[in-house]
Image (cartoon, rainbow, N blue to C red; front, side, top):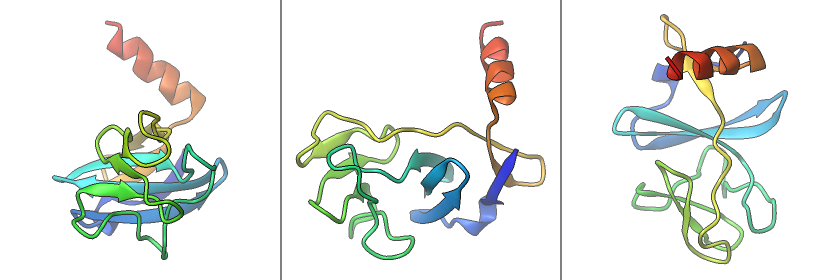
Length: 119
């Protein structure tokens, strides 16, 4: 497992970027739920943030690409406005430990989660 941060490190209605072994990622917390995505716009493949840890629009309701202003729903990553309308950000699977650590899921833990979901 690769630990990104503690869940409390990300405030509600905020975002945070990470450099990880699988590439740049970012997390958004909305209504106390965490969403984790690859930091890559589906239009041009560029990073989304306009400043460090700034992935949201001014209303903090949408993820916004700094390059062309594309806007994405936080809970699904779907682009609803801009040059990549209808495309989605790539969601990244994660787990939260009992102590609140946000961890990238390994292939083994993804397989375990899928097996539990099929029960």
